[in-house]
Image 1: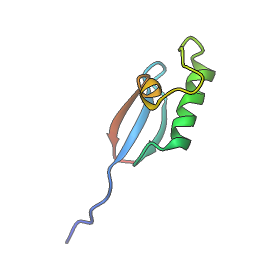
Image 2: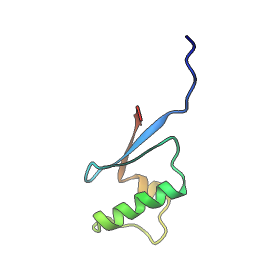
Image 3: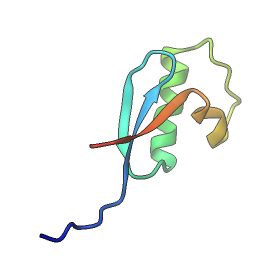
Image 4: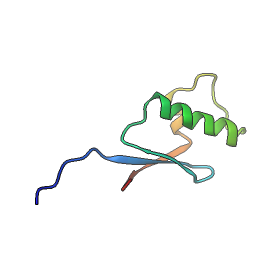
Length: 68
């Protein structure tokens, strides 16, 4: 039986509270906005600029391969 190639899926977990926010094959603007919102609402002590860059937000998350 031939295996079908699928794109990898990643779990995005908050490094502070260990909540898995999402599983996704790619982090696009909507996912990034959700990650930023989580940090601002749940971790107000995290300092983010007004419009944070991708790396500024990702610094607070662990991104690992997932089985989905």
